Amino acid sequence: MQGWQEFSEIQPLATKMLQQSILKNRLAHAYLIQGERGTGKKQLAKLLALTLFCENRQGVEPCMTCSNCKRILSNNHPDVHWIKPEGVMIRNEQIDYLRKEFAFSTLESSHKVYVIEQAETMNTHAANRLLKFLEEPTLQSTAILLTDNSHAILPTIRSRCQIIDLKPLDEAHFQKTLLELNVETLDETKSRLLSALTTNVDEALEMHEEGKIYEIKNVVIELFQVLMHRYDERFLFVHEKWLAVLTDRAEQQLGLDLLMLACRDLIRHQVDREQPLTFFAEDDELFEQLIIHFTNKQLVNMLRLILEAKQKLMQFVHPTLVIEQLILQF
Ligand SMILES: [Zn+2]
Image (cartoon, rainbow, N blue to C red):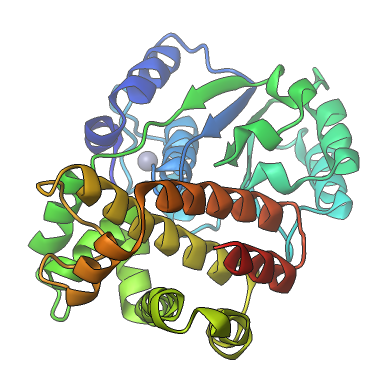
């Protein structure tokens, strides 16, 4: 686990702001950490918890070795709670459970931290319950809400949180870091793709080892071939290939992310051949054909449709419907 020093290399502004609050002992009761996938949201939440509970803190830096630090690092600290969506959303019961938990134990311990991942998946009921909870003055607590879609967070929740913006990371910098790990089978092309999707080393390695991302990449490549050579078969392709390989909502999102990267490569290269590629390799024959096959206008339109599809997936429209509609409009 990296400390503030390392974190400041990837998120200098957020780090500076939080360090000042820590040193002045003026941390807020609620934070909303917003940033794209891979910008370090979870890492930052954990770092804040470590800083709050560490028994041997040096300045702002947690020691990472005391019993509190160890328990937080292994996700076993009784006063640090992580809430993740159960299935596709955070449920009312999860928020209720938190409230009870906190009400019981404030007598024994001085502080509690709760982290809510993908806070945008709370429905209005759960969010309202959370809101009441945030406003209880008797609780010594720090709430840390994480989201990569801050617009989906209720304004009433947003207004009660201090907002921390995490900036998208420098892909080239991260790709270099990945290659320097010298993982066998993790080559230039793969590291470039991973760097475009995350800037978290653990997440990148997990994706690489799991390998699903490369399967999905092949499906995206096949989609382009279908669009070029077997246009009438794209409905069939959706069912026989896309939906057969990409089986849950997270994989659909990943598939659409890859599709966006591919379109971005094509659009960039139509404008400037010197632009670096993320999805395709430089000597890819298919890539050359696609640049000629699609007009810039078509590609920009595809990008817009993909963004809409991603939004629909987040609003829980059925994935089959979303993907069918998307690909039929290409
Ligand atoms: Zn410590």
